[in-house]
Image (cartoon, rainbow, N blue to C red; front, side, top):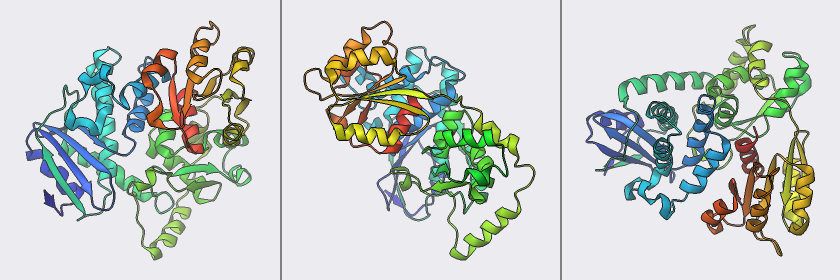
Length: 417
């Protein structure tokens, strides 16, 4: 095992590497990075932090080109590959457990949801995001190890030099937004609509308030079909003047390195400089490109759980103008209520007396008017959900307790927005 190489030096050394995988470990955290090489070129890259969330985001971005990549299919992938079962064992190789999401991409190609060309495009975007974060790691604290194996089937082959050139240009652009914006995983919230209306229209402000509700820049990019960097640039004037507040990256994204590390005395000086460079180019039209991507709609969500406290938590998380929330504590009466409401999404607890979540899910799927509604199974422990049984019952996705507001909002983004 070799020590004390910078992130860039490690990537450059892969050009002369044998075909296989180099795992990189950062001494300060538990994140593992994996770079798969074939003939001196990158064929895949991943890191162990929310790897499936990453591939889901990029699949969502491609769904505009490939409509078959809808939320139902993406949820099917999560149920199948987030914890590989015996029926998908052929996609699992022992030393590839770090990036089971790659096996999901293989499955999409094998089942003709993706062409090999589109799969290559998807993988190139994932590689870029992973390397963009990897290059921000501090120097001198990295260890790496090589494994002699290959991914089964490859769809992308990126020259390392050219990839570094592209990513380093992007990192310069991210760095220029600091110290105000220091990470693609920060979460913007509209906090001062009155000040914002001095720069953009009232309608734009209203729409921004409905979009900026807990998603980070990368997630907003997937939601709106835009580059996260472009969104950050367009929102930066409103962030600098205080109309939009930026929250720290939520766990676990707060474990990833920043794109900007200012010296203490540099931070205030840079903020003043950024305030001075806000020009007429950052106008209402630019920000409206973000605000008007999403239709204005009030989503109907039904939550079924025998726990009054859990229903109260969900209601507080979703208590806004965007959601019409119906809380149901008695699973015996749920089907009739759901039929009359016809919600856009159902959150369904598994462990309920009389009629449990699996049984109720099956009953809902037998209804001709309810069968296509997304159903998210809620479980007290991610490991306790029987994925095979959930799929047979017709579940669309699952959400593990305990969850925070951001987890619930991500689930809603996945299925409704």
